[in-house]
Image (cartoon, rainbow, N blue to C red; front, side, top):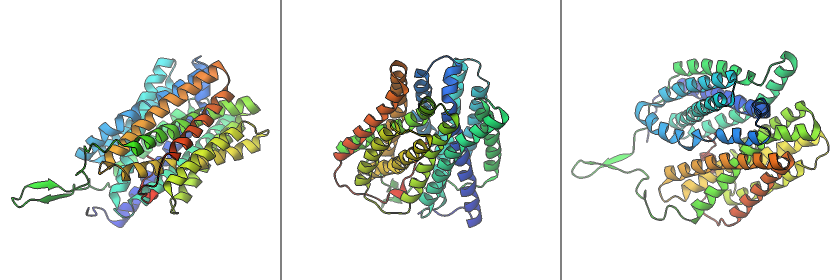
Length: 409
């Protein structure tokens, strides 16, 4: 059992500071999703370019969190969190100042590396704070992230309307937020890295007694792990595809920028409410995955038929609600069915999410360019249906309380 290294007051300060930081990451994420179509137009890469720019953001998550997680376990998490917040800010400056596509791509890779690593390391800090309450702290931080993602498009639309700000305002504003948060977190006391669980043999030699006993087991990559990886591929691809194409879809359907901002915000608000509710109730994980994927397919399809902006906003909120609990449920099932390889299982889910986040928006961009943005949205209906069908193959397995695993992206 890990000894507490902080006082109760220090612990609460860390939780509040990290949660506020994740709120601003959410603001950045939602704001960029709103202006990505403008960025695509600026660099003359068309609607297809939206998918490519969205896919580009998923390259750093494929490997950066894993590599820097090992560094954080050796040198401590504060240097990694603060250092990559600085990298996040630098990437935002590069993107906001970009005068060409290559410069913007470089900035995206830089800021996304900073965003992914700092968010994951900060989330790990929350888990280290308290064995019993750590996952509640993570739930709170992810709720704040979702609120920020909902607030971002609304705030950006307000600034654009009243102060005539451009597409790059979100990047420069984010730079200021992250510099301030980096300085704040420098002053916040972080807990020490948890000690590894060890015991001693009769000869006084140290042996590991953690959950690694079955690591490397031939049974690790088994059907349920593969099924869950496919489900993760689907849901993150759906999240990235929806977030980055909904602005173009609504603008095309209603020719109203205000509606597109509210529609995107409703998506994130629905997700925030869903995550908050599911963190307080016990539910059947396998059944919930089936229902959530099927519901997402229905609501996304319904969105293409709505006739007025108000209906679009409401349905978008329902789409977000159906997305809400899937990430943590998939990770919970993967960890509990990994034969002691929980870290590897969750890492595999992260890799699957990265691939989905790259391929599905890219495919949507191709379809939007060759057909229409409405056809691209229908791609999400198909992916959601595939996710539901894949989850139908899941049988009853050991199902931990899903609130013990929460979204890190």
